[in-house]
Image: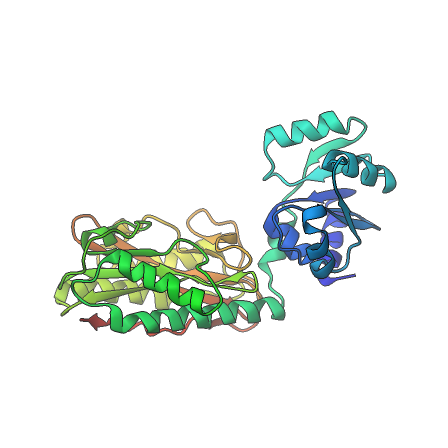
Length: 356
């Protein structure tokens, strides 16, 4: 039995859940290793099976670990095979992931009338938060690739270059390394940098701009997520004040990220640091989120977080200040929680850089 399957069965027993249907892509991959777009795992206290269709039969045979694989092709349908497997395993009550749509659940209830379908408690999210050493190594590699991408971009960032050209070069570089972006990069400059999730445009970099680049890479299904903000040309006193306070907030919250604290407390540390310069009012999003098989993996660091900080978690730490009409600064690192503190996995420098 694989470690993920063992941990899930322990969680099912603790929650008194007799069976679970796992079909969200990230949870399927975490549980089985399967990276295709169509598949589900049916797990009970004693047995488990992975179901996919003929398009993925070979891939499932290569990737799925710890579960027998059942594949099907026309004229059979998923409805037919799922009914067979539910009957074979003696399942008359099954939990489903709450990410499923109402329409999907209604179809299951109609197609498998002898089975009671119940929404699952939040079982897999806390399991996925605690990374294995293998998972951490993949995230480390994705972080190294993100660091190398920013290093590659530095000599290409100068006045007159368009935001979109920076983004295109970023994506080409990752493709040349055999990877891809883990989300659509954010490349925003000048007034555009006041948009936390702004999109690259044909605006050309100008002296006096802040330039924020938020990007990540994939390595073997695991993501990185890093943000750095630069000044084009020479930085003035206001640039240094805003940047310096965001950096202070980030360093303080990273220091606070350790076992025994909470997501709310770590978030508060950053806001208190920004408030010393009356900048917290320009910080409207959460401090960070979990990182792993998804860029936004389970967990959050925010005023509404319900997470405790535990060894094995990987978090982004990304305070930001966004001043409409002026610009914005965000600094983000990926941080592993250890038994005694934390380890920063991204290593691109954070001192204020003047480019061009």
